[in-house]
Amino acid sequence: GAVVSQHPSRVICKSGTSVKIECRSLDFQATTMFWYRQFPKKSLMLMATSNEGSKATYEQGVEKDKFLINHASLTLSTLTVTSAHPEDSSFYICSARDGDKGGDTGELFFGEGSRLTVL
Amino acid sequence: GQNIDQPTEMTATEGAIVQINCTYQTSGFNGLFWYQQHAGEAPTFLSYNVLDGLEEKGRFSSFLSRSKGYSYLLLKELQMKDSASYLCAAFDSNYQLIWGAGTKLIIKP
Image (cartoon, rainbow over all chains, first blue to last red; front, side):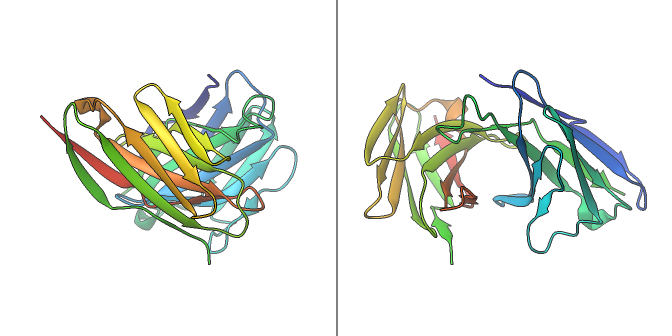
């Protein structure tokens, strides 16, 4: 099946610093990628939808200046948490839809997730 | 509003069968997904139903009734590795995924 790679899997940073998380589709072109945030024992919360070559669409309540998303190519989207604070600590997950394969079923392929801890 | 309901937690015995129910209310409907998520990991795709009926895939089966806004995931011959959270999610009319909070399945020997 299609593979989505997310890096880093774990990151610990100091408050006030910025952290970049990468999401790559390894064997397919992903015109659309999704970024989720998940709190312990909670469901996935969609943060934004990232479209290649255009600005990301953010969900209500998500600060676009805080969570910068760049989808510069068909295989790479990045999420940058700017000036991170302890409340930004969470599990961030990306997913991508392969329009050629999963387009009919709508299947999403998820990255492994990135656990961010802000001290 | 849009909503997905599923039980918070279920317990079953190794080797047995368990059914995890999900009801949904969405603005339009374009299919329902089941994902498995082990603790600390990202979800993995299990099934997708868009037509009424039962889809069987090995030990896992998924059922959909569009008229009732209802789905279930059936797990047979339970194994300890099946202990995980099972997420139900539905596509609305805009193909936005609406996620349930997940059902934590605990398998006991």
